[in-house]
Length: 472
Image (tube, rainbow, N blue to C red; front, side, top):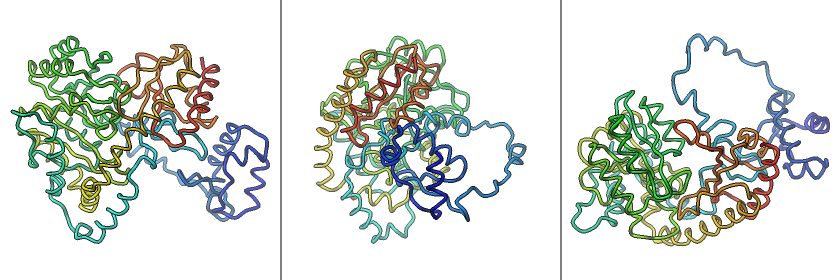
């Protein structure tokens, strides 16, 4: 710490610090010690971290923190925090959540996004350049989205529609600025504040957050490797009077579960008996490793307006292109569209034009085909490391798609200790606690096999095993 302070004092603000591995080598200390020192220096205002870029000497006349501003008056003005976004950012952005930034040189197994090498970067850049030269750069967009993109989303879903079922139309499509905002709009459309909404447990943390912001009350539904238990689901609807069920029938986040064809039919029967909607989040549409017809979106087989379908391009095309869709038929579609417009007005036509350009290219289809093998290799590499290095852990099967492995650890595990100490050792993992809508049913971690540096998966899991032995 002393040597690092002296190094900082002798250099100008804005100077980049050496990488963690360089500091470890030059000073003969462990990566955890380096990370601890950097956190201390950051708290003192001597350095600042820029995610994805590095650590720099803080700006200011001497690189030291300026006189702190006093914001204490805001406590009285704001009162008690009532927004779930203010109080439970722990679901994603807390010190053990999946959105926390990755320190330089750390192995990222916690983030929910794929490595940029798994993205169609070249065609995205080309599409953005073309969109910037088009009228989309200086135009507004229709409330429901650019007609051509709405038609593309409807056509994509319609390709899976069986004979005898009316396919979705462009009029049923609303383009979203990412599906996260769509979740809140859907919850407000199908349930009044305080009303129950059934949700898989565990589930996507963003759905828990959106439900809290919408004021609905989540009711957990558990199941097996085939999907939710239809008998228990039927009892839950009868007991609560709920009118909606949020679920991920394909490659669920975080478990990786895909509902069996039989289970799909049983769930629809339960929903029909109770006059309820299925909110189908097809978040991993582009991340399947197989192509089985029975794994098509459930919305493709629905023409009664019972399934509300969410589909995103953000993860598979680019995090910079926050474009998704909700496809809903009948009055519920109009309610959702009105809710989306009230919060977002419309989605940037520039982003819509670029997204449509990308998915219309033959190179997009080529990219998706090659992605399957890359995801499968990364999944197997990380799963083998878990089996070898974590013999006391239980892996919840090998998912046929998605980005994550769901790992159960011994019940004696101190998850907070594990997550924090792993980060100090240069390995980022996500605690499973924030992915349950009620109390966790065990000690779980979610590991992203689509993150960068797959060659470091095995030593990263070895580090997890070493830290786990101390956090029991």
